Image (spheres, one colour):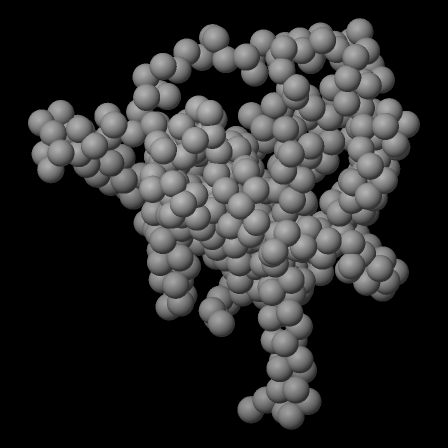
Length: 421
């Protein structure tokens, strides 16, 4: 039987968890276009927490690397006059704030990490889906909207009807698009895991609908690659063979039905914007590929950045190369180191015996991150997206630390009994 003291402590933790998840949701959704300022408000609290935390080598290295990147990148923007002072302060503080916050909030508990990941997925998906519905409600459908916007694929923000590019909306939808494999994962002994699977299914449906309407090819890549990477979560060879054979069978059945235009599926598909863009796609003609090569060559000629390299479009459309284009070799190198640390944390997270669905969520979400990082100007255009990546890295590292400590204390493999909500 729990003591009154422990019960009171549990209720207190639940209250603070609720506040933390609410704050995270408001930030992810940029609620009323004011949510973007939340990290600035909690930065002083994070500074106090840094003095109270017990540091370990992994946390220390990550924090120093990320802080170094933020400082150098902010200084670059200040001296080159690329951004206003307000934006520079955000560059300086936001990634650190979200990383430390992610490290703190889960307290090394799988249950907490489940909850915060679900909040992130639902918040981002809702913003993208509701913004698309807002646009459709005004113009009737996306075809009329695109014509009204002069042929540009734009969506009207749910909060103030400001215009957002289709690629920008795709960042909001990316987590939902990566959720398909989660629907098929089972976590034995976790009765509430079905809640996660239902949320994953609904998020996937909403995101896929939006991608088809907007013709986002990147979204299609996220769906395919998330399925492939999730396949590695299956350790039983017999199950792998079953999954492959079942997938191949379903594929051929669907192909036959598609070719024969059963229920008019093929006709409906061929009228979508996504079909038209896929038909007209030529990989070699993508201006981003040429821009990537130009940016890499320019890094040798202009190692201090400053946007001195001549490129055919405004940005390199790549997280790392855009940083190199603006800031040169130093912030680029620090960001690469932070990326490597993040990948190592992910590998450890998959290696340790965390709950299967939790591993699946982390793996598919990180897959969505890296695909989007490859093709978009993240920090310059979708800074919140990068900050949430830092938040998830913090959660991963804290849960990895908790797992190692439990093993050290001889608590065997079941370090994290999952009790959902």
